[in-house]
Each structure stands twice: as C-alpha cells, then as structure tokens.
Length: 193
Image 1 (cartoon, rainbow, N blue to C red):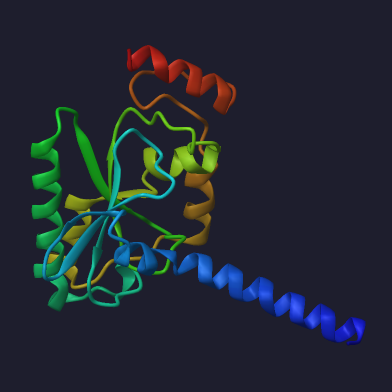
Image 2 (cartoon, helix red, strand yellow):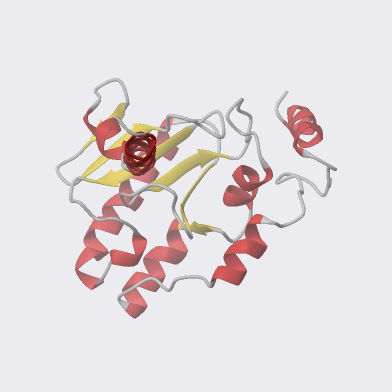
C-alpha cells in the first residue's frame, strides 16, 4: 500500500471516528446502564462525562438533530421534556437547572438536567464551565416559550458563541472570580461541604 493510500485511509478513519463521536448519544439511549427513565417519546440518560454531581440528558425517541430543527409541531415534545425535568427535580433534594447548549456538540436533540454544584472530575476547561454558566446554556423555560411564540429557535451568532465561551470565569454561586479552572474547582468545594 502506498503512503498516499495509507494517509487517505488514516484520514477517513479519523473523520469516521470524529463523526461517530458526535453521534454517541444514540448508542447511549440504547444502553440499559445509561437509562434513568424512558417514556414513549423520550429517554433520560446519565451524561457519560458529567459536569456536576447530577447530570442527565433528556432525548427524544424521534431522530431530531438539534433545537434548531424544532417547530410548532414539537411543542408537546418539549412540554414532555419539562414534565420529565420536574419529575427528576422532585426526586432529589438539590436545585437542578434544565437547558440546551446554544451550539450543541452532539448530534441529537438533548436537554441537560444539571445540579448547580458543578463538582466533577469531567469539568476541566473554561469552555466546559461557560457552556453551563453563561447564556450559552439556554434555559428550558426560555426555549419552550420561544418555540411556542415563534415556532422555532433562533440561532446565536458566531460572534456571540465565541464571546460566551470566552467569558471571564466567575463562580456560579458567589462573586468570586478565579484566575483559572483549578482555582475555581478548589473554590467550589467551599459551597459544597
């Protein structure tokens, strides 16, 4: 096999792996060890790389790629997402938030249900932090209202996307502004004793 063929095969394998990674939620929906709850229209799974002590994902059974594919016909589905969020909230003694990333990294519509402690070994980067603590995290209630009023969800601009993920670090529970993620992670333990 020539070097050129070998390089093409390597590039194709990398592309397939990269694409496959973004489709990983579909496999997780089928894994009984990942499933927390299941209904006719939705599945709740544990996030494989949780960013807090409680971190679940609500996904539709139907193949909907993202919030930007939603229209008025999906209002009942999003209402079911909200019902499932309330059920999970009622089962735990901590406050949870539910929302969608403005620019999702995974292909399949999914809503995060996450606790505010943000204590996890998987929370490693400023981008991880800002994706849950800035307006990049579109709250469920806001998405539901926008869908009901407009029949669709408006995309954020690339400039806003970049700006939100580059936002200066700040504790989500007080006014502390750490210099870096290790300092922030150490600080979070003060709130979670």
